[in-house]
Image (cartoon, rainbow, N blue to C red; front, side, top):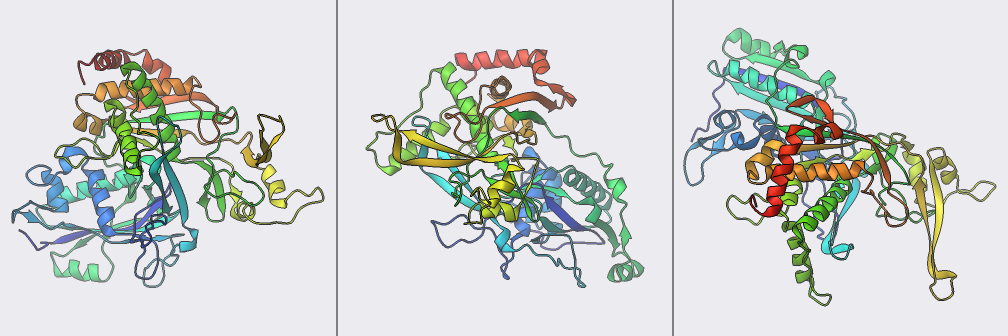
Length: 528
């Protein structure tokens, strides 16, 4: 095994990664009943370990089977290192990725270290729950929470690539491609990457790339004195990124009724409050998290596949123990091959098991009108009232199209209000939202699910068709008059349609007809 890093030159990157979505990299939490904690360094500051970044960067630069260790993935192994199981074959990585401190800004102190470490008090908690397919209620044992770094934070990015005369030209090319991919916003790190978290982009204006020459005394002295040769950022932006087999879906929409995902915490002035998340320091915006949006799409896909296959969801008996109820829910998630290929399922731990992370990624969707954090926090606390006895925070929120609505359950015997069944909701009326964005990893779909990749694509198109037709409500209280949306346009960007194609046009194309044929064969059982 090679244990040294031969080096005659060093390519050095110093800059920042900007979090365009919340981020969770797990830490060592002590309480099993508490939210999954974020990683903190020895000084209690949120950070992302270099090991986590290195793995994500390798997958970004060498997607699919090319990132494998051993004889395969030769370029990836040369750069990132590898170790053969039960063998002395292997080498250390020539790329060094340092721990990334998470900050609120891009300021540096006199020692060139980040000076605006993110206050841990700004971390948020996101809750997720599994929905039982038979009862439509929370599945037993599938409620969890995780602490996330808010959107808009920064990660200090420091990477060194140790090169030799033999590898320097190729290393320059590989680093240019990596920077181009980061510039294009393709990096996802941490947990729930396919459910809206962990999306990072390179902050170009704050990134510096230098090349240090260690092959001569003059070059070594120049590197020590900080006079290494800088790269022109406009040049590496022109680098050709690796071809990626993906389909991007952009859904422009507007609410036809109040649309929201309910916060897990009730307010003081209002019971049910929309979920909001930080979008910049001092401001929050309503959010439809990727977990909820992906769950809605998966639920529709399951309904379609279960209907055409006439396959009902398994269920445990009402008096069954907790372990049996949890096992039944896992069987529901694992029952449908096309749905599992798109949206993922828990792996079984067997060799070559294709289960695991899904091929569909759904981003968080934010409202376009942010609210000051001070105003939003006041909803959770007792507050002063105006002359009409209306809390001042609610008066301010009306400017953002948020209005309190009172609801009550009706007693079936008396026809009057049921005892202790009065509740209120802070409903968003006329709020405008960003588009919903999906990404489908066609390369992973074809590699891990080669026998059903086309039926799975056809199933996703059916889901998108139903979404555009207004058949899929979104968010909270969809059975009580909320969650209806109007989809204005769905644009698909594919390798054979790099400029985008509208969904209706794509559904009438020859490619869609071929997918339909594959879907029909899958239903008949000839491709399952």
